[in-house]
Length: 154
Image 1 (tube, rainbow, N blue to C red):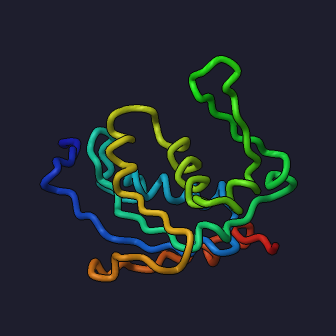
Image 2 (cartoon, rainbow, N blue to C red; image 1 turned 180 degrees about the horizontal axis):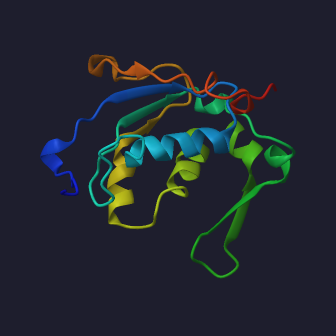
């Protein structure tokens, strides 16, 4: 018996589109991270980029459980003394780039290495319903119907 190890020539990448409207942020991010990594495939190999290309639309309409929208604080530092800054998750969603919340959630669910930085190039997140990837004919992945806990009303 031989163990199958995939090579880059064996990889079959698909395009998947996910509508994030009304879906819980963390649950969606874990599903997307699994799809980007390729763990849903039977031929998964940890050292190869086996995942699919994922398009997320309506990222500004994602939901959060509990009081995370008002209480969860995201920090960053400018590099200058006293330069720590903060925003709540609600402020980010209402701001200029609401898709960054989804990107960071997915990025933090991937391992922190060179492969994960390569995997993040396969993720496209858009705040609205418009996206320029119609030519790739993406398949729709309905995250809402996977589990009733994946959705949350506003």
